[in-house]
Structures are given as C-alpha cells and as structure tokens.
Amino acid sequence: MTAAWIADWWPNLAIAALAIAVIAWACRPPHNDYRSRNDRIAAQHITRHEPRPEPAAPGNDDRLLEQCRAICPDLRKEAP
Image (cartoon, rainbow, N blue to C red; front, side, top):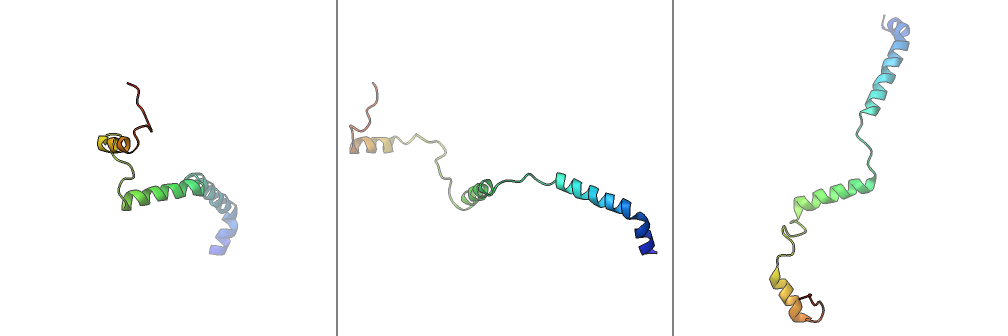
C-alpha cells in the first residue's frame, strides 16, 4: 500500500520537497565572512571577560596632561 501510494504521488512529493528546500534556503540568515564573525566574537569576548577598553569619558584627566607637560614642555604648545 505504501509503495503504491508513493508511486502514485511521487511528482507531488518531489515538488513539495523542492518547495521546502527553496523556502529553507531563502529563510537562512545572511552569510557573513569569517572576518566579521571573528571581530564579533572577539568583541563579545572582550566585553565579557575584560574591563572596558576605553574610559567612559575620555579626555578628562588633567593630571595626566600636566605630567606630560612637565616631562616635555616644548612637545606641544597650545595657542593662547
């Protein structure tokens, strides 16, 4: 009975299988190259296991600026 049913319905089954394959292929997520994937994984690893790589408000440490000026006052002169 099953073999006879498959023999009668094989064209419809083949079309259904092809339709399922096409839908599955169309619904897959977009392909990213390995570099963007590796960058994403590295960023997740850093944020999970290490402190934030840059300060929350950069450029607000005047003590460090004064230490740099004390070491080499002629390196950078600001306009008055």
